[in-house]
Length: 149
Image (cartoon, rainbow, N blue to C red; front, side, top):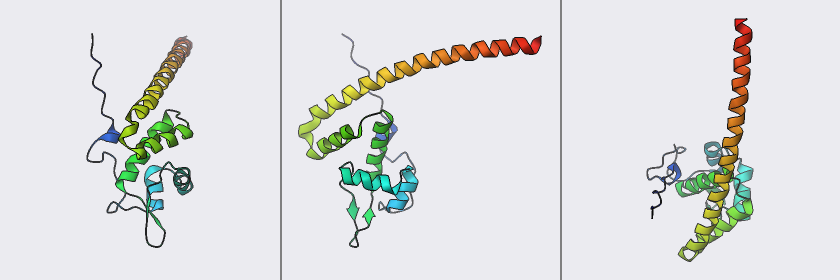
C-alpha cells in the first residue's frame, strides 16, 4: 500500500512571515491592512461583522488594531476565496477554528471536500488550457505560412 505524499507546506504557513509586513510593531490600522492586503476597509469591516474576523483588537478609542496573526488569517481567507469557497463555509470554518480542537475532524472534512473541488477545477482549467494552446498553434502556424508566402 502506497503512503500518501507529504503535504506541501504552503507559504502562508511558514514561520518567519514570508510576506512583507506593513511597518509597525504587530499593530496595524485598518488602512495599513487594506493597503497591505489589497482588501478595502469596507471588506475588512464586513469580514469582522459576519464573524470571519471576530478577534480584531481595538484601542481604548475603538480603532481597530490588526496583528500579524490577523494578517496570517487574511492570507488564508484570501486563499480560500481563490478556491471559490462560499463565504458561508469560510465563516463556518472560522467558527470551528474558534471552537478549538474538538472540531479537527469537521475542519478536515470541510477542507478535504474543498480540495476535491479545487482539483476538479484545476482539471477543467487544464483541459481549457489545452484547447487554447491548440488554437494558438493553429493561428501561429497560419500566420507563419502567410508571412513566408
